[in-house]
Length: 294
Image 1 (cartoon, helix red, strand yellow):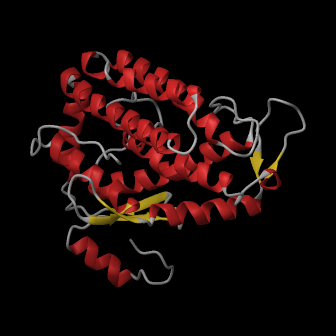
Image 2 (image 1 turned 90 degrees about the vertical axis):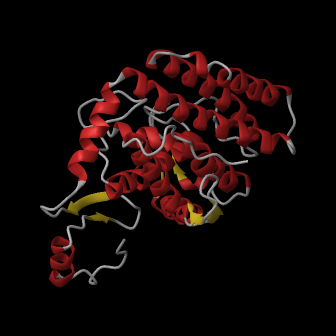
């Protein structure tokens, strides 16, 4: 990925086109802007396989199960980590609720059932997360449209940044971002991107929000309160700068990939997960393995 402007020349573009190499353009936040595609692109067969896989109910549900499993396992792991220092009955209840939901995944034979399991588990999860914030910023439950308190604003903004990173990875490996497995295909909805980001929500965004709030990196001064109750709480420009800085630090953190064993940044892990999905779609691997932390 070319990060600094001025380095990409017509000569670079010509070489990539001659070699049949697609080039993805993103901004400094990882937001996808476009791509340079050669007429020699080899993604036609891959996308045909992807379409076949998403329209086959059995294949789709099989992959969707692992996506939900990955999300819930990482949510439970995050709660367990914090319980060591912040034991409480409500946190135990949330951990138990997510655990019970995990036990129902393999019995789900329909996407609607999986979505119901995921939704109920996430509700329990956020009730546990609520107990972990040292600052009282008005967070009681997850609210997206609109986010009506600072914590929800941080979560929503973080998930948006995560979408940018996952979307870039999806385009890089040649998958169609609009053909998903867990999330339904809708107009202009990057369903596959939303699928692949599920297993990273807790370990990238939620853990970051907990850290920057509990260490007073961000507080009430970083938010613009709405004139009327129930309206969107906005992050100030200075707050956005701070948040993006710490988000970028987070995804550039190098860890050991749980499946491959190789050292890689979280950003690189986005691509590794997308490439693993490619191998499943093309029949090189039987099962999709979500990215899990311990």
